[in-house]
Amino acid sequence: MDSSPMSIPEKSRPREEVLDAMRSFGQADPDYKNGRTWSLVYYLGEEYTQFLKDAHGMFFSANGLNPMAFKSLKRFESEVIRMTATLLHGDENVCGTMTAGGTESCLLAVKTYRDIAKNKRLSVGKPEMILPESAHVAWEKGAKYFGVKAVHAPLDKNFRVNVNAVRKKINRRTIMILGSAPQYPHGMIDPIEDLGQLAREKNIPLHVDACVGGYLLPFVEQLGYEVPLFDFRIPGVTSISADTHKYGYAAKGASTILYRNIDYLKHQIFVYENWPGGIFASPAILGTRPGGSIAAAWAAMQAMGQEGYLENARVIMKTTRCLMDGVNSIKGLEVLGDPPMSLFAFHSIDKNVNIYAVGDCMEKKGWHIDRQQRPECLHAMVTPLHSDASSRYLTDLAEAVEYVRNHPELATQGAAAMYGMIANVPLRGMIRKEVLNMMADMYGPGGKMPDLAGGELPEDTEDTREQKTDWAAKAAMAFVKLKQKFGK
Ligand SMILES: *Cc1c(COP(=O)(O)O)cnc(C)c1O
Image (cartoon, rainbow, N blue to C red; front, side, top):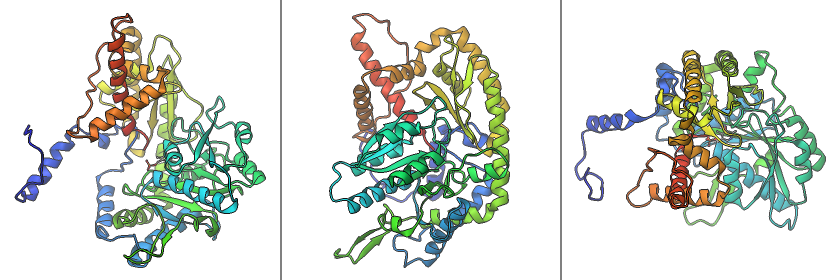
């Protein structure tokens, strides 16, 4: 490789050559088209994807920054919000905006409720919000960005937030409470009805994070599966986020946030009247908002129709139940909780089977699987595409478990050792620091990618102590790499 600093090529390159180069860059990426990924991608095949691209392309250059300029985009946005409000049983007062993704929707809720609290009371000290321990990491980000203290409420044995614990943590600084439908790590739905009652009683806003469930749960319910209430039917719910770019099957860069009425939404909107560039008003965090993503979200909902969403939900539920039964029937494995939707996690109940080593084996077999911690487990997010991949997945998983059982040394090698260490290192500050250093390496001069080759964990002697610290750093690197692949 050329080691001189890279600059924009002096001469323009033939476009075909550029596209070829890009294709080759993509060759090592996860194979989502064959159902090999269990997070990140919601893919419904080439034909549907081409349709989305057409819709996206039509408004590719349009900008949703100023809602008065591109009336088409404002119309798409309003209708996406309206359709979503109806789906989530909101009345005609429910309103909201589109955002670039679930994280933006969550961040906005934090900002909105912080500002409402500030407006209502003169001084509350440092604002707090109560998050279930299973809350999506976007909420931790929101806490940091907006100076709100995240107060964590523990989960019950079924991985739903303990409502009594939430009650005890409410005080005069509490600006909002959160429930998820479902939460990402274990796929469980928090007891939203109980949270709603509590929110009403204490007169505190309740946001429901339905980023991943918003466009799937209503159809799962219609199919006759048992789904606890989670939406605007519960009076205490003041806002809901739902990601069009997940089970809405829209193009990436599209999510929604809905409020029970405009009195809440008003606090989300930003206005600055003294800018030399003109009076500025913006509904969400971004300035320029990509027209393509807004347009494609509308297109997805129109082309899919309720019947399309229902049919996909049917396939997903059948596949998920079959997968969960399959996992439970593998000796040594157990699904955590009883997830009602399409997300689940499983752990090892056999001390001779290290679950991270199982993850390594699965990766060798070509599967892209997320490792989780607290408790240590593997994760799956099921899409319609997985109906063809599931039996192969289960066969491979059973093989992997047997292999790990017969090769206990795998637990102390490669990525499994890193994950094990990361999950169990008591000095979380150290992990944090190392991960930060690694990000700095990736984004700093030279853009160094971490070496994830792994290796053997040295024996625990005085001499290896220093080496082991290095190991933890390496472990931290691996963790971030996977964390980045996490979440969708
Ligand atoms: C995916 C997800 C988010 C964040 O959404 P992004 O689109 O990845 O920013 C937030 N909450 C939950 C429950 C999610 O599943």
